[in-house]
Length: 285
Image (cartoon, rainbow, N blue to C red; front, side, top):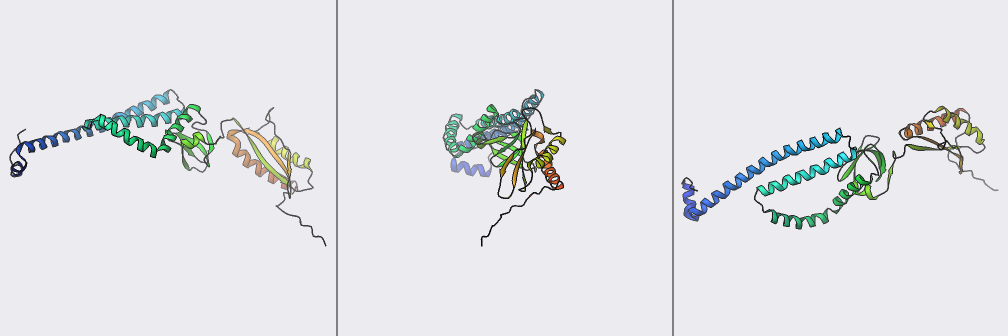
């Protein structure tokens, strides 16, 4: 390729030779064109990926795919498509794919060892998707947090606590650790310990507790889920009754709070003593 002879090119030609200057110029122009092509592929590819993800999301919503599967598929598909785009850009820049693959494999082993936790979280996400210990919308208690599942992504699960805190929990721990799914069953049992003073007649306490049960329509009274009011213990300073009733899972917290307050007010109004913690000390002369 012939280039215009300027004072700079003349001096470089004298030092390196005209052929060397032409080779350098050709390389710079060729590499520049590859960079422009790579940028073009990046922006076009990114536009196409966004359109594909939007189309897939619309199809899954239309077919009413389970939310857990939707979020997981969206996350996995996004990572896969961007990986393909990155590999295409590397190829356009002229990096040998075989050499790149060998380098990627060598580096991948080191990264894999360093990111073993991330791979464990990916495997955990797959297990959660297959075995479904919980799904989007369930309330779970795991890893020291309790909240409603908002999203199940490829590496982690996002839950929202009752006080509107967003908690991100790695899938690895959720797949291999202990977990409570508080909405898996349609019913939950409300347990309230009712402590009254010694000397109180048990039947007087049960009359008040039965009245609370009868007047609350949220409490289930059908066969197999009947309320129970056993005397559970005799503690150091009180007799303990166990107020056990079954409710729909969605009504658990409202019934627990309402019945706790109702038990206190009704027992107090009936003159039944709810004792403080106390110790009787007998002194012998």
